[in-house]
Image 1: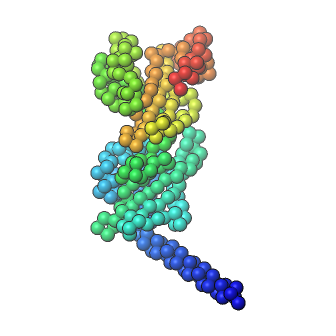
Image 2: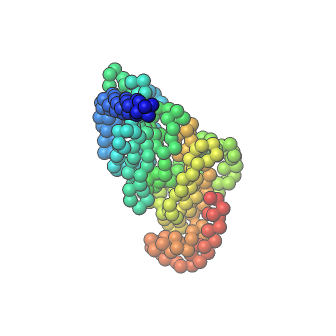
Image 3: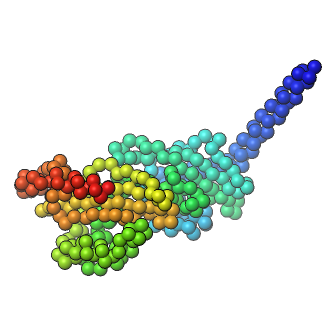
Length: 317
C-alpha cells in the first residue's frame, strides 16, 4: 500500500518541478527579449564597421571605462566578419536590469578560414532601454576587466601588420630624435620591470648615432615567419610573439616582437623586442631568397649566411 501512495507523490513532484523550470525559462525569455534585439543591433554595427555608432549606443559605464579610441583599437584587432548568438538557454538574467549573453564569433584567422571565439555580452538597463555594458572575448572575465570591450586575442592578419608597422614607426621616430622616453613609456609594465630605458638606449645606440629612415615601412607590408601563438603569462595576461622582416632596400629590416596584454594594461604593448639594423644575416635562407626576388639588384651572395639567424630567433622566443 505504501508503494502505491509514493508514486502519486513522486509524479506530482515531477510535474511541479517541470512546471517551475518551464516557468523560469519563460520568465527569462520574456525578461530578456528586448535585450536580445539590443545585443543583435550592437553586433550588427560592429560587424559592418559602424564602430562609432556602436560605441555611442553603449551604456554610460561602458564609455566611462573605455575611450572611443580604445574601443576602436580592440575592434580593429578582432577584424570580425560574422557572429552567432548561442541558444537562449545561455542567457542569464540578474536582478531584472542586467542580462548576459554567451555566443560565438566567427573571426578571419591567418588563412582567412573561420575561427570560432567564445564571447560574453552583458547588457544593463538605462532609462528603460537595454544598453551594452561589456563585450568580452575568451579569457576576459567581466569582473576582472569591468565595462567596455576587452576582446584581445591574436590580432587578424591586417591587425598584426598594423600593430608591427606602428611599432617600427614609433621606434624610428624615437631613435631619430635621440629621445626614447615616449617609446619606452608606451611599452608594457612587464618590460619596464625588467629593462630600463638606459639599457634600451645602449642596446640600440647604433640606430641613435647612425639613424636610418625607417618611415618607409608605413607603405610596406611586413613578411612574417609564421603564425603567431598566444599564451597566458603567470600573472594572467596574454602574450604573443611575431617575427619577420620588412622588405627594405638595399637590405631588409628583421624583427622579433613579443607583445603583452593584461586586465590592467588592456591593449597589446611591447614586452620584449629585437629590431635588427637592416641586414640579410638574420633571415632564413628561404626568406632571404624571397626578399631577394623583390630587389632590383639580385646578389645571391647576400643570402649565403642567412641561416645563422634561426638560433637567435629561437632564443628570443
